Length: 207
Length: 132
Image (cartoon, rainbow over all chains, first blue to last red; front, side, top):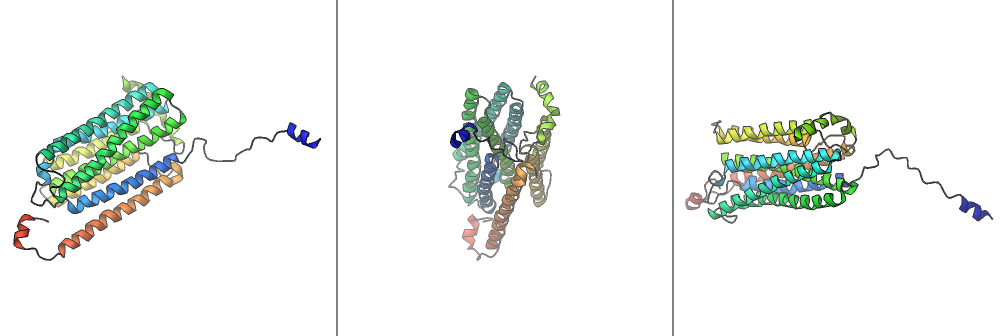
């Protein structure tokens, strides 16, 4: 019968004429667009700080509360952590899991030290009476710098979770994609910090 | 130790050609680091050393150096270029940048005019609100 003849010749697998590479997917672009939306959050907080930055309401001024040597250490920590994360990505590309995990751990520790110093800075300021409710300047300062610090904290938590994943399942395609998203997040936060230390702290002391 | 093991990737520029598959190179990260460090040290030195007497000029310089450093981060750390994701990364970034400029610029402009056109304050209020 005709039907049995047809069953004997299963259809050939479909051929896709795509010019895109096999590993190409939309996650990285999607994550980039998320980062751009995050940029709007920071932009509006920067705008608040720009407008309210000198409204001291008779309270402490920027040059009185900011500790510039401490800021220099924090800036260095975040910059070095960005570079060591880059080293981890290079090891990932070379399929060297152990070296990659070591560089990721170094990046995570540097970022954790950054968050620790920032909490210490906030605690010192609050102990001196420079609390968020004291003036519009301090409200905008704590909101902007706190939002950035919260992002870094979330980044560290994400890194720890991903390191466990990498340790258990290795450099799978999904893990590589996640790592590349975290890498973008990490470098993006360092980029935002350039705006924070330049504008909020250094320009804040000057104006 | 780690420096010697890394030196191999100095020549790893070949795999950078793939679209959206840019992990950078050791040379790229180190160049970015040195440039970013220099562009960080200069503004700190300007402010902490009280190098420039004119405040507006010092503010302008600090902001200009920050802008340059942001471009350095974009190129060497985030690997932003016109080719990755068929240019959509760059397009999304330019769109975001336009909105950021509008939000920041317009906020400052509007609030500056609000302040300049505000009714004169009573002397007692002004005493507590210097620069308000």
